Length: 335
Image (spheres, rainbow, N blue to C red):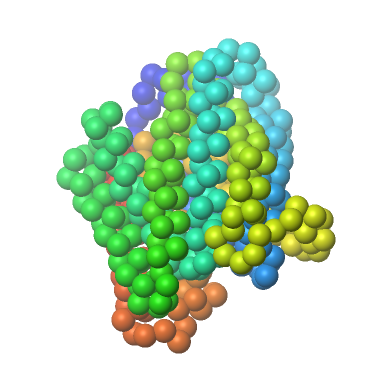
């Protein structure tokens, strides 16, 4: 899974504090999977607090953690190029790519969170991320022609099948499944678009390094929330339209859960970006987190309790297919 770095990656390694061994990289991958696979539990814990209101705090938490990481972990090794030093040599184009990645990702994630509010974690994650990985695999291979073609084909086919099976499971559980499926498919399309932008910002010529990448990515998430969220509030995927004043009537617990969810997600993103130079399949391995999210939905939140056996079988099969597909893609890029 851990592969030799390229010249660009080696230059990136010299600039920042990165994992120095395969073991450290594996630990960071595990952190990434745990954070990405668990943040949506905090949305569930808010109860009736609408996801549109939750998302203001989510985006703030993501940006706050990104700033904190950049000005602490990104500056600890003063003998090497720090986060601030790296920005002085980074290209404006790279910064723009990182911000654009945050903007594109945020639309995908808001659609995913909307799907979670409709269909739950167990169905939404395999559907959306399954589409995203299948599309990303095809586009990335056509553009870069890298990775083991057999494993790539197998991984793309498995994640695509997992998305289809998860959609069938949700259709077997709910009479009106079209809205959730449409949200997940659209989320998957945008999710497949953000990571190439992030790669251009971080690892191309004059890259901005991991902490700069996460910081400007967080800026893109926060700014685009101010643009996207009023649309979701006025044209909700579920329930009545919302007024912004309702955000200020929320309890402290609801706001804190949103902030911590954003911090948890961006921490997983930072772990993934830190390990990426030494593991070319880090992003794909990290997407096993979607299977973890689905398991949270099944066993912690019992989202398929009381449904027909066919629906339970299908959703379990989708989780297994998705995990196998993500692992296949991780091996394909890491060989």
